[in-house]
Image (cartoon, rainbow, N blue to C red; front, side, top):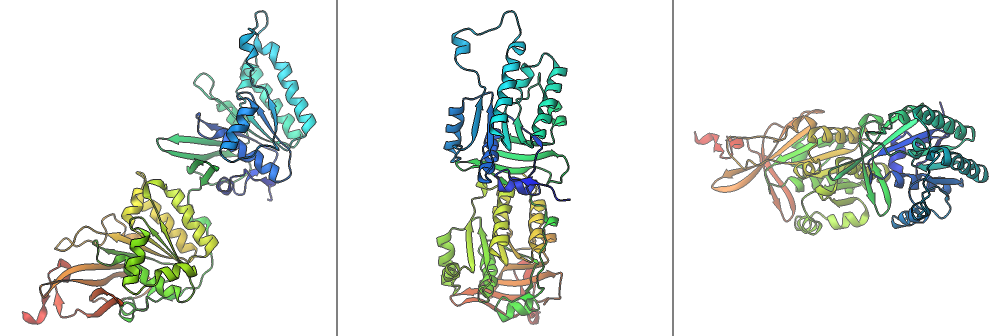
Length: 480
């Protein structure tokens, strides 16, 4: 069924709504003060202007001049938006315009309604934003009259083929549950500590992406970062092996890593995990493929210097567009906002390899949420899109008997598990590399010496004459 949809003016919100709001329906915007309800209205009306529509802002609370000024401060131009200002003037206080004989509802109800009817008749708007509908409660003698008034008002707008967004000022005395029942849709905005969110509670006649989605209020208004639902994304891709460009590594992996798989590179600090991952990006760049490295810990200058020192032309790759390095400050990014960054690279720039360095830095952006669940969603999405994922995972055990591949239970996420290990060899600190798991193909079950030189990564022959490598102090077999 094709539904006639209109944009809210917020890309992420339109995505959650499966393309936008259904035209000629009514929507309640809920949320505590400061959650962004009025700003959402700005975007909604401005989106109508961009489509050549007439839009109307009906305000019971703030003066028109203040609303226009507030919109300007977040770079939203309301010059072409029509206003009906029904807010209380200063005269009510200074001239004591109170009512002694009749109630306020009896005196003010008729002129308020007539003003609305006249404005709609004169302007013939396609979109209306009303802030707030709670005022109708005070213009009604009782709850029955209020409910009847709202239902009549909604029917009047629908007959005029108008799409209405309205806010409410809910309280314990005046909850807005009744308005939820009368609305075609309910959009809820929340503020929780330092995090804002938006969720759709109801859309009559349409699907939507449920759950809480991240919302950001900035100088550009509202941005919405949808919760990632992997199963709704799918792209055809060719199943093929991605080489590292180093024969010994490819031998360990029986050719390389497969496109659309997740590879976990695990090991202690400084052992070469990031360099190992970037090596695959270097080889992909030679084929003109784009890779993206999300660096949660390392700075750009340090990364470029390190790559230059080991013969990986990262700067040239960036200039040619085959590599993008995105520095991520974990405490500034919620999981959904990070998902949005990755999605843009995949869907707009056709990135083929995504590397997260590291999972411990990524965990900081979780803000107490489940790391495994979010990484699972991200990796599943990238797999569906044919993107190869490299996860850099740091373990804190340098050497000894307590060998572990991951310390956060991440191992099940990996189709491929590669580990790097420090070991003492002939009185010197050396490194070894091995493969613990490959879901798609077989792999070499021996360990090899691993080093990083000015010429790049160097991998030696299998260490088949040693035992005890995993405990960090190997012994030569033929010495026993």
